[in-house]
Image (cartoon, rainbow, N blue to C red):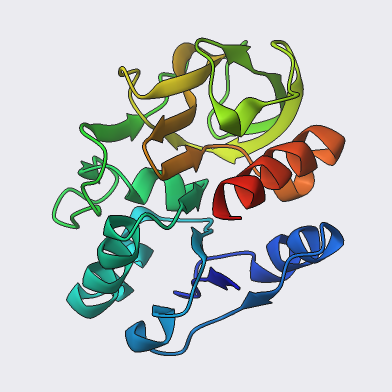
Amino acid sequence: MLALIDYGAGNLTSVRKAFAALGADVYTPDTPGALAGAAAVVVPGVGHFDRTRTLDEAWRAAIVERVGEGRPLLGICLGMQWLFEGSSESPDCPGLGLLAGACSRLAAAPPAVKVPHVGWNALELRRESAIVEGVPSGAQVYFTHSFAAPVTGDMVAAAEHGVRFAAIVQRGQVTGVQFHPEKSGDVGLQILRNFLELAA
């Protein structure tokens, strides 16, 4: 079973439909304790970083415990940013801290570059990873965000919008995607399929 975390900032319906199309069993835990039986955890999200504040210490501890047991964790969009130490969007709101660094606002250079970054953009694969199996460099995925994760050694793929930023990150069982795979056609479904393989 795949646990889809609902903290009031996610587009749960479309994420749930995408995983269901791949044959995954998905549930939304109502308490941190209900994460105990999850084979993998997904943290979706859209909107302001401060919304992650509702994932209190009990939720954070339960998610970290699942990761410690070797269960895969996927963060999508705001959910990916939450995997880091924090974001300049809400400096007093800590991230989960499983990935080093902090997220920051995309640098705008009008009129050519507008923030938020909304639309299709290419992935530049930077290293091999199971999460991008079957995904070619240059594949197009759908973004909608104003803040982004830093370029670090955990980056699997980059994208560029004014500046280069991390589009996919992975460290061990922890994976994040800045774009919306559930809205990215066959490429997005392939990435979700790869995540399910990690959870198998």
